[in-house]
Length: 134
Image (cartoon, rainbow, N blue to C red; front, side):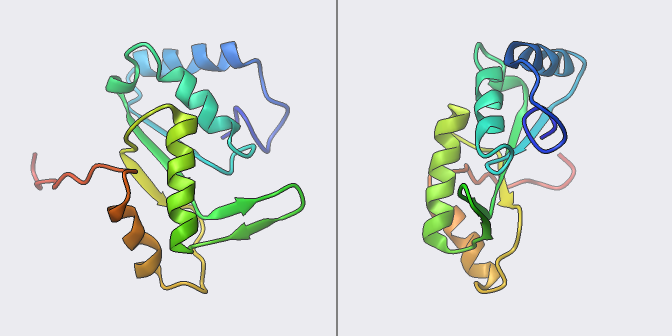
């Protein structure tokens, strides 16, 4: 998040890609971002970072739940928005699968069961059963 948003002006993209590559070489295995980080630019940065075989070395997480326009942010758990947000994240990340896609902010107007149920009916993630102890 800090590479693209909120804390200070963004650093040069090539430097950030180099830093993330260094982190992966050092053993980092999870990259976690969000569509709200400097709206969408952090996902684009991560997508560029994953090129050239890097994607296979990490688990990829991103978040949804905050709509942003030039004037305001709005929490949204509407299933149509979740599907739209997931498809947009896939494009920005330049991937066909997100390993962990989760709610950044919960929309109290929509039951959480409704918000997350749409994730399992999209092409956003691959649902693989996890066996405890493996």
